[in-house]
Length: 527
Length: 65
Image (cartoon, rainbow over all chains, first blue to last red; front, side, top):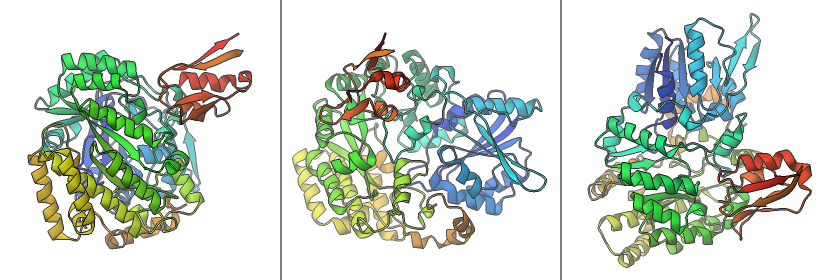
């Protein structure tokens, strides 16, 4: 039995630290016949615990799953922890899409795992356990350093995408799932299928599909029977679950599947639920099925109100009319629609951000909650390539650990002041709508309040999006969230799961020293 | 050889077909669906088959001789 340590880096993302479905699936596969421990690294203090755990144990492998935003914490870990005696493996979206730079930036890694790791990690464990050569393990790239110090790489073929039904069930017990679920008001986030068919250029999904020998199978849903079995198994783990979030990228993409699922779900499970969808997939019959099964709200990426930006830069090919129709259809069926937006994208002007604001304020009045995020460039995605090619990214963005901190683009098409303004105005708009709804105010009154608060957006946005250094505003924000939380019904936990904040890049001096050396040599965000 | 290609109802405009084979498929924003370009399909057989196989809603159809 192989002994392994897997770490999931999830520090200061702007979200409440939550369950990672991919790692739960990996644990479900690999921990069956092996001694594998999962460490959810969600605060910097954990780095001290990790040092002890790594250095004072004998591991067959140590795996780290991380996104681009978390790299600075890996730098810190490697500054303080001796990993030289470990078989150190990187995994997750960032290493998968930025393989060469990952090895360059982190010479500590002996290997990286490309894409989904269930079958390949099981195979690695078998080989380790039997004392066999591991260098042929599928989906891994191994680094080899010869006697004279020359580095070479052994790139193995990536294992084909598996059907979800053929994978073992996810194992969430490696996470502090009881605290995570109870802190979010009894909302259990689950994932049934995998893969998104859309081509959004800021997102990793369509690029990840290309890594596999069978990309045509990228979008996968389990059978209905398997889906219900999985939900029941999860509910056994946390019987006090009050509602479910299906975190699948586009839960509604297959109309036949979602209709059949809803039919069975209402009989077998019956809990209220939320999901993610695309505006193109929302029609009356889908809404009827979802509503009858207990859907309370659906999250949509609206992203931008500028059709030009959406179609030409983001590659989301639909008209504003489609977005408006979608939200109107939801309202007709008494389903709440939530609108998520991005500001500060490459080539985005203040006029385009205003279009986003106006679309949400005037045309999506039924969007009772939502958010604006700052654009973040992920290496390997189309928009990162475009940003690099046109030299649009500002220096120092590797210090940002989420989407809520600061703009990432240079002040070419919009000033940071403008980007911050629209970020704050959109977030204030949704915060006020949410509070009004929680106070059961009629829509007409709530929209008047929205307009009044927008007039005083500057001081009010300070409460909704407080600066990290502003203790008074932070405390008011905390109390406000508590009121909203107490007045809330189960079924949505988005607002109180966000630790909203804004920090200045220049304020992160403590990270500067550690990151300097790696910044100078290897920075995939600016290469 | 592919002699006929068509798109059935239910396209979700995901853009996958356009990405896989831009010579044949194109998203029509007004019509809210993927549409076909008038080209010689036999020149793009493999890509058309891949687009059909990877269509998430299985609406891309073709007929072979």
